[in-house]
Length: 102
Image (cartoon, rainbow, N blue to C red; front, side):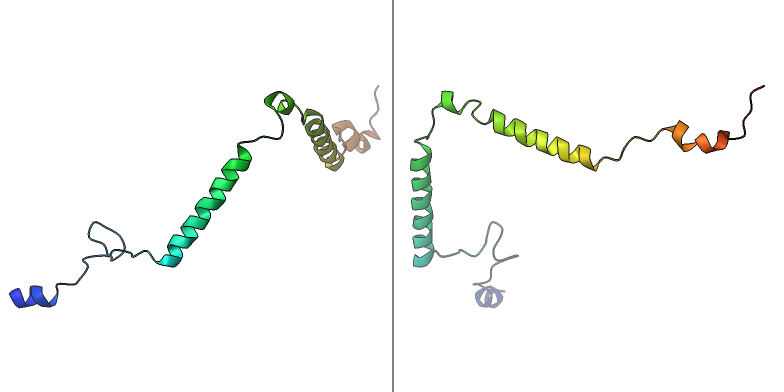
């Protein structure tokens, strides 16, 4: 029993990358540099987003006219694809050719 425990000492039980007793993943220098670069980019994005181009009052409703025009264009495109109305009287009018009312 002790020989088995000695020989199997370095084994990771179960899946080696998940679970309570998983194999530790070591962080390389390249991974650290990539993380630092991502954090710098995020910091720069935060800086530029903290200074808006327009005030809240200017931004409110500034695109209402453009959105209304876009909606009208979409609506017109849908209507142009729609087939014309068909009525039952027009479809069945040929059947009442010989109909005579007394």
